[in-house]
Image (cartoon, rainbow, N blue to C red; front, side):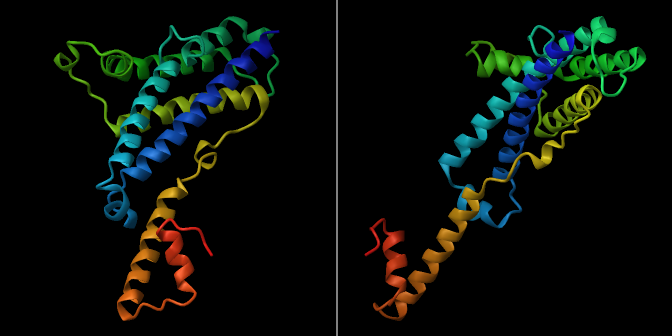
Amino acid sequence: METQTLENKLNETRDTLIELESLKTDIRYISNREAEYFSEIIEKSAFFYRIYRNSIKLFVIDICKLMNSNEDFSLLKTLNFIQSNRKRIVWKRELKADRINELILKIEILNSEHLENFKNLRDKHYAHNDKKKFDLEYNVTLKKCWETLFIIQEVFIELSLCLTNEQYIFSILTTEPYEIISLLKYKQIKEILMTELKKGPDLGKLQMVRNITLGKKPA
């Protein structure tokens, strides 16, 4: 029973971590000023700015679920469960008591350094609209977001490996949003069509492509 309970806890944590990794990928992709597509597609787009802002909101809300010890599926609560039931859990690889204590300390240190900032941002700005929200300093940067996520992933990966002998690599579970590249290609194609139009009105077979860019149904 304890083994199944732990597996359920880790499955919930895994799903949240996959979502967080996806959000991180989206945020990094949209905010990459060095990319070819940034100035052409992202920079002046209110749509992508909203995606960027809302992705950060979701990231902060979800990371708090894993850090805050009051949350049912926080890593600290999971580790405390393991500590109390270690000998009743069927492990694929032994997880010793000393190592559990080290992992608990690792999460406690992480929480002491970052949790308050994440919670204040979540509670004062994202989950609620606190009238004193600008009175607090929020020491949250994307770099700290990624560092925090990486440490949580490390702990989860070790727990999962010990319980199921399965190792997760979160970076390969997500893909970069191809829609942005598709938009860049669309713009490049449209520019080629406009160049051809300047040479003469007869586009030949390219007219069908132009109709698509104009929102017309292909003949």
